[in-house]
Length: 172
Image (cartoon, rainbow, N blue to C red; front, side, top):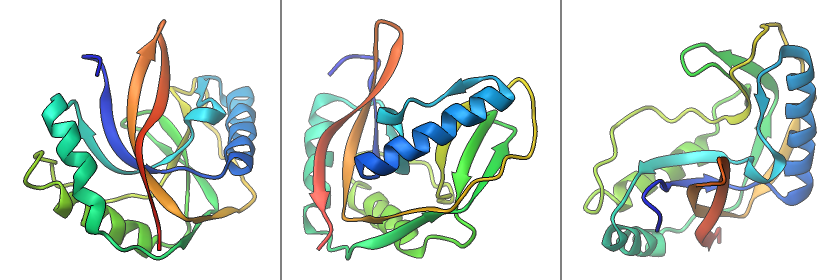
């Protein structure tokens, strides 16, 4: 594992939905400037873990083994601007209770391996970073059924950020 890797649990949309969200991100970029998230990096973060030692990564990979999660719908219906990190994000109109429960279960599962700061779960998919112009951006609803979740690694390769699955688990 490279020293610059950061790990997190995430939901990955199916490729067609990633592509659709990627087109939406590019559309946002044309209207607001900034940097659109590339389609292959689009995900919904469940739990950010940060940088881990190799032994911790192995333990984190074992931690979700006993979790039982039924497939659930992820529905994103509006775009919000988040000023503190300077992001445009696709978000649901209603809380995603099943995703929040999974995030809480993952935090509990890794509690003996890594100290994760307690922060409220906020379901979102980042579309655009550091916009130069702010404006209200509409979006059509985009939905998919989450049938699994992944442990992802954020890696910089030649200055470009890539999110790479390390391990995955199916919903049952």
